[in-house]
Length: 103
Image (cartoon, helix red, strand yellow):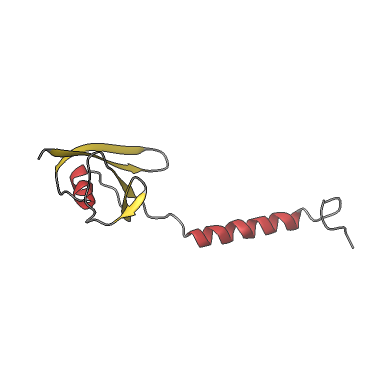
């Protein structure tokens, strides 16, 4: 059997890096990540956007994605947005503001 051709990618907010590799049949997502030489802190792996473990077997043409750790917990981000929306609504509640009429 020949070699598998796969791509390993990692994206940051301002750039991305992609490496095409030829690996032996039976190679795993973890093997591809290590062989890519991409030195990025990653919290997991995905193949075409589907999360997989290090031991997931690769197929010809797969794109292995190095998943970055979250910058902020999604629940905390949602709380912050809600808090800011509430504060913004409170500042617009003065005279002439739309919404609830003044007392």
